[in-house]
Length: 146
Image 1 (cartoon, rainbow, N blue to C red):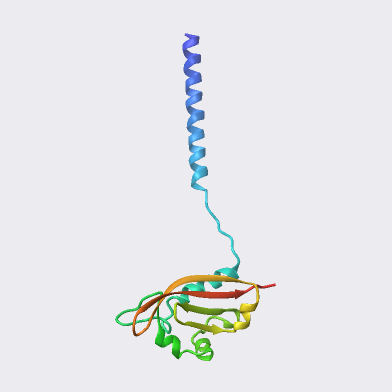
Image 2 (spheres, rainbow, N blue to C red):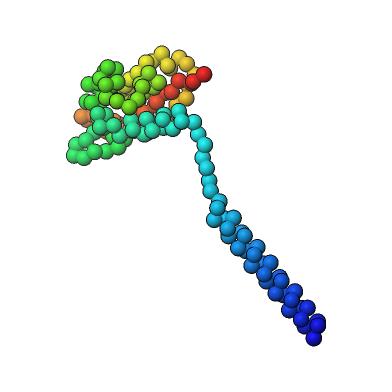
């Protein structure tokens, strides 16, 4: 009888320890989280570049609003001054925006930034001209800080 009780006691203890182990594992997984760290400056540049691909003063909006489809007529009408006035949230001295297509390129901002080593965000865009829609790339150059 004592062997039967000791075997059952061992099984019960094993069951309790296993159950506690499973519960502890579940609690550990429940508190698991992923954190991403980045510089505030980088987040601002990413937000700016995403905004630029859908900015209403650049995009083709007939018959509807399309993100990433830019209007060549609007691009031709822009100057650096009118480009800067279109933004109330960004200091454009930090950016140089270059929109390049196969046939033409548009540059807004201080082009002296091109001589420096800097970071670059590129986004595929299309430029709608009167004749066709031409694939292009929007490049946003960001000067290195420090």
